[in-house]
Image (cartoon, rainbow, N blue to C red; front, side, top):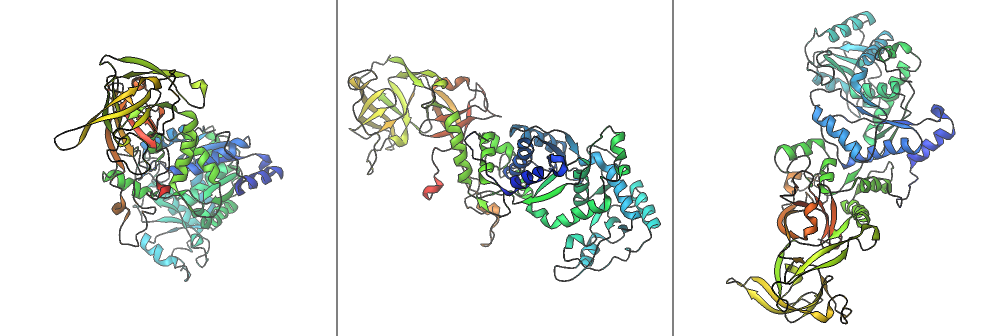
Length: 575
C-alpha cells in the first residue's frame, strides 16, 4: 500500500478491531494464507494474501503460510516454490511456514476420537453411491448401510485403512451428522479417503489422506489461528468447520496435539473464527485453475509467466509493481458482495504507481527516418534531459542528437486529419528538447510507401536561443538514428476480447474469445542510455506508455522490453 492509499474500513477490519477491544483471543491476531500447491497463484489470490498478511501486520499479529497438501495427486514442489516466491514478491513474509501434512498424525488421532464418540464411521459405499445417497437440495439424503457399525469395528477398519489393507476408493471415513440436513455439507461428509500415492513431504508414510474441510479447521486450531479469513464459497462449509471444532475440542484435549510436541512444534491451540469475503474477480480474464492450466498446456499462451496471464508471476513479468497490486485490493475493499472489477481499474492503479516511480526515456516503436538537411552530416551533440519531470531526485541524462533521427510513423500524416497537430508536409512541429522542425520533402519507395522525411531545423528555436519559446502546437519525441539501441518490444494487450470470456450463452467457450492481437512484437529503436538496463527495470517511454525490461529474456546483447500499460486507458474510449 502506498502512503496515499486510503485505508478502507471494511467489515473484516471492523470485526478484528471489535474482537481486540473485547479481549477475544487475548487481543491477539493470527491469520494464515492456505493455498493448495496445485497451480500458480493469480491476481484473485493476491486479494486473500493482502488481507491475511495485512490484517495481521496492522494489528501486531502474525500470518502463517500453510500449504494445504492433502491431495498429493495434484500437487507439485514447483508450485510450492512459486507460491513462496509470489508471496515474498508481494512484499510479505510469513511468521511460520507450515503444511497440512505436518499435522497428519493429529488428523488421524482426531478421526479416532470422532469414532470413539460415535460421530464417525467407515463407509463402503463407492463415490457414485455416496452421491446417490446424499440426496438433493430439495430431497433429504439416505443413511449409508454402514452407518451403524460399532465403535470397535470402525476403529479396526480405520486402522486397517491406515495400514494399507484396502484398495483406493473402496472405503472412506465419514462424519456421522445428519443425512436430512438442509445443508448438504452436513450430510455425513467424507473425512478420509484411501489414496495410495506418494506424498511430496511424507513419502509413502500415508495411504489415507484427509479431506480439505476436515483438515482445514483442525490445522487452524492447532496453529492458534484466531481469524480464518476465507472466500465466500466456504460460507456453506462453515457449519461443518464449527461442528468439527466443537466435537474435537482441540484446545481442551492435549492428547490430540501430543504428536506436534514430539516434533518440537509446541503451538498454542485456539478456537478460530471463520469469516468469509467475496473473491476477487476481474473482467477480460479467467481465474479458474483448470482453464489457466489448459491455456498453458494447449499452447494458447507462452507459459505460466506469460505477461498476458492473470498469474502473479505473469503480472510480475508484465511489469506490474507489487505495490500497485497491494494498493488496488486495499482500494477495492472487502465485502460479501460478489462483483467483477474492470481490469482498467487495476491498470489505472498501476499507472499511478509508475508515474511517480518510473524514469523517462525516449523510444520509437514504428520508425520512419527524419533527415535534418540543414545540419552537417557529421553533426552530433548531447542534449540534457531530466529523468523525471516531477522529481529532481531522479537526476538527468545526456541524449545524443544528430542529423538523422527516428520518429514515430504516426507522428507524420501526408494528408492531415482535422485536429492533427504533428508533422505534415510544409508544416512544423517541435522536436522534444531540440527545436522546431519543418517537413520539406517526403521520400517514397516504388510502392508508394513513405520511407523517409526531409526537413530543416529552425536554428533560432534551439534551446537557449531567442526563438526557443516560439509557440507551436505539436511536440514529438525522437531518437538519434546513429546512436539508437535496437530492441525487441512486446506490446501486450488483454488476453480475451470480451469482458466475460466465461459467458457461454452464445455457444462459445473462453477459447473462442482469445484476443488475436493480445501480443505484438516490434523492432524498436531506443535512446542509448537504456543499454545498461537490468531485467525488471521500469521506464516510461515518453508518449507511448510504461515498459519493463523482460525478467527472463532481456540481456545486454538482446534487449527485450514489455509494455506494462499504455499512458491512457484505450478501453474507456470504447476501443
